[in-house]
Image 1: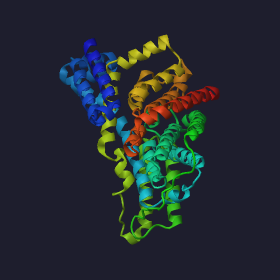
Image 2: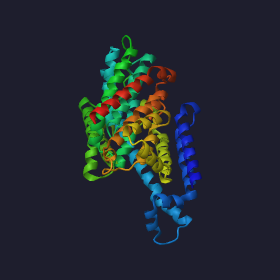
Image 3: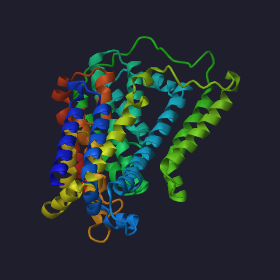
Length: 458
């Protein structure tokens, strides 16, 4: 059993390396994640009975009901009681992200964000830096940061003509979206995972990470402003997308925006009142926006324009790629948890380290070289929610907040550790050597300041 566990760990480590070096090896990260996820579960079944007695002994004995354990009973229990837990958790996150992404899609198709292009056309480069970073931060607290990055990069290309200036602003957009998404449970895929798992609450999570995230944002802006000299090289002509020959009036766009934002902010309340999964609340908001849009577009015979959009073509999330990647990572981390490897590692860390700040820094460092999604998934399974022994691991404890914050910031430090960073490299054709010279140390300093503010607050 030990040899099989070591083989499983080796395969997953190799998979993480291949995923993090996708920009070099050109392998599809989704294919790597899915292959690793399936392969390790097949290996798991070699000693499935032993692993069940190690991790689910009481449940498995109840399932047997006094009968003798066989390969068929092991296979049935694993399929119906073990794997399904991880798949259902992954689906809850994916369905939520699909709903929120579609909400942004409907808003964009109806010109809700068109006015941002006019409003953001300013000549002061430093003022533009602060305005676009704060705006991105705010938007990312409501929508997931990947969608926010893609949306803001598309707006940026319609405003700034200089590639150098776009590179600076693209990095700021990525950082602002990551920090904004980190301080709410609906703004980042990792914080959403923690919320779905039930280890954080919406209000407690935001209260703990808002000030550190804002502090990091301010430091990054102050340091990055020195890269900008002169005025913004603005695109000479606006190329506004109008949907078709008719557009919604300003008040209709405002209504759609208000319904979308208020609806998303009401999802935590919906979950608290009903105890339903968050994606049901997101679907409710999406349904309301679709009904309102259909009413406003009555003269279009109910046509809904949900295709052929430039920024959606750029977003790899819209394809099945990110969905399959997330499922593959969930399956992979699930095997690590089920074979006892994460439990063993958590015991060692608790015995020899027992410091949540060290855990946070470790997760951030690993996210730099691997990917923040599997790092957070692994961190979620290292320790159980524990109120009596250590309050740091209780619901809304420091460990869960540090895990989300450090993994998010660490993941974007080398770009390829986060989906947002990967999208910046793809969409804006950002030169990696330029990023390493100018942005890594700035992100590292902001991370340190954010951790210091977090320590002061707590």
